[in-house]
Length: 216
Image: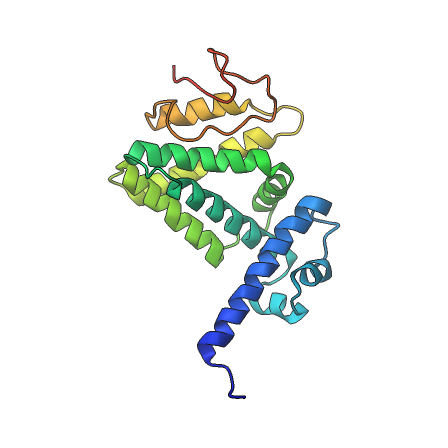
């Protein structure tokens, strides 16, 4: 049998890395951060422990990368969903709804992620984060920003703030209100995008439609 080519080996490593990231998301959501070990993750992924050390400095870096990958997947799916966005406003609306929706559906994971980012060690740069950043920057370009880099940073800060507000234990902000504020900031019609379903089904807009929001 002839040896595998470098490209085949790299593709296999990439698939193993993807399994690690997926296993991380699953286990942290099931058990929490502290109760999840690297051994648990590699066992779930069917990967060698050495692969974690090869790509990541430790569990914290692995978890941040896994969450950034999930955010990138959700954002890309929202932007690429049929029908194709008609204009930049629809692109921005879908991006906002994708991140808000992810926070609602993956509350435990996002709470852990935000607490890590706000800790002393701060934000970890990784390929997944860079891909997410590029997608958000493309979003503000398609929306029509003439200063995409600065607008991307502002959009990132606003989405992070909304995420924290949704996750605040004991005093979360209503999803509909946060969506409305973000839509007003970018001049978006409330009917655009794909409104996430609120955790509390009683949260409705003025017309009584669940999850919908009107700009005021």
